[in-house]
Amino acid sequence: MLPLVVAGGVVTVIMGFILVVLLISWFSNPPFGLGNAPPQPVAFPHTVHVADNNIQCEFCHRNVTKGEAATVPAVESCLFCHQEIDGGSSTTSANSQAEIQKVRDAFDSETPIDWERVHRLPDHVRFIHESHIRYFTDDDPTKKYGINGEELKETLDVALTCTICHGDVGNKTVVQPKTGQSLKMGTCLDCHRNNNVPTDCTVCHK
Ligand code: HEC
Ligand code: HEC
Ligand code: HEC
Ligand code: HEC
Ligand code: HEC
Image (cartoon, rainbow, N blue to C red; front, top):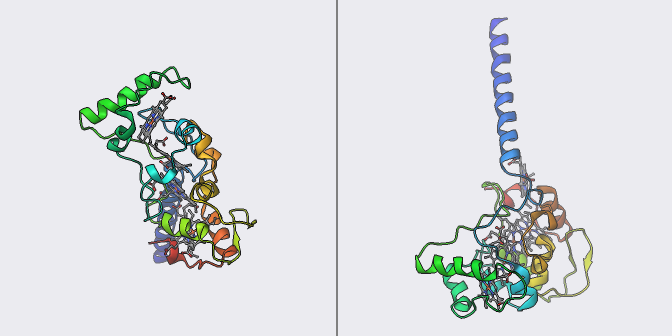
């Protein structure tokens, strides 16, 4: 009798532990697409750069067509333009000059800008930007399907491929996960199934 009670206790403790771990990971890591935008150290508007000045996504997110992470640009790449452009003639925002000055100060003092991550998957999940961008921008005749299972009638360019998962970032002043897609495991799986991509656990989990 006693060993059974002890075994029951152990099982309860283990179940409790799993529940706590799941709850912690749920609340510390809001599901992709449901969290609020974190405050950023510099008010960087995608609108001004992409929609108004036509700068390509991959000019700043240099690794996005090459590897796993898209990467956020280093201060040096901002100075490529902001050495000259000081925001003095900006009509888009009263704070342009002050915000651009922050970027110049960071460069002068050699301190990186600590951008807050907006989208982050748990550590046990693997995601590779490069293979997704390559697949959707490749004009081979294979039928391709978007995030809601809709058939894509034409080959997408790089910027349009980003909108599949991130929404219309180029027309947003703040990157809001809420305006993009909610990338829960089910969303990844649905799109993989629709496009005949393997869905074994080990494709995405390390
Ligand atoms: C002039 C440089 C620049 C260009 C061009 C640019 N971005 Fe960004 N992007 C940034 C910076 C800086 C951040 C970090 C600050 C922030 O989150 O707003 C960022 C953040 C992001 C994020 C959120 C990253 C995270 O933390 O999860 C996404 C998604 C993104 N950009 C997509 C795009 C897309 C799509 C395009 C093209 C339509 C684009 N960006 C063009 C500089 C740029
Ligand atoms: C290819 C050129 C280019 C690059 C690279 C670039 N910017 Fe800009 N940025 C501009 C232009 C053009 C404006 C508009 C300035 C104006 O209207 O006076 C601007 C405006 C801004 C503004 C003011 C926004 C507003 O509301 O008017 C901020 C802040 C800014 N940039 C930050 C950054 C940061 C941070 C980076 C690096 C991650 C960066 N920029 C990289 C061209 C660039
Ligand atoms: C198939 C969905 C998907 C597409 C398409 C996609 N992303 Fe992402 N992106 C994600 C996911 C998922 C994350 C979070 C990755 C992580 O936490 O490991 C992310 C994170 C990011 C980040 C922040 C972290 C990093 O990787 O540096 C940036 C910036 C970004 N994406 C930009 C882009 C741009 C620019 C494009 C288009 C060229 C793009 N993404 C296309 C799903 C996508
Ligand atoms: C819009 C459709 C779509 C969504 C959403 C999507 N994927 Fe994919 N994924 C693909 C396609 C298509 C491929 C195959 C690309 C190829 O042929 O190389 C792929 C391939 C992969 C690969 C294998 C890459 C390699 O080169 O080994 C991983 C890992 C992956 N996806 C993870 C994810 C994760 C994690 C998510 C959710 C956060 C996700 N994907 C969401 C369409 C999608
Ligand atoms: C196409 C990519 C993909 C595949 C394949 C996949 N997963 Fe996931 N999985 C994810 C992503 C992204 C998350 C994180 C987001 C979430 O919790 O929905 C996740 C989260 C999880 C979690 C929750 C862990 C936590 O942090 O709360 C479990 C458990 C899990 N996956 C198990 C599995 C198992 C078992 C399989 C195989 C049958 C599998 N996954 C296949 C992408 C994938």
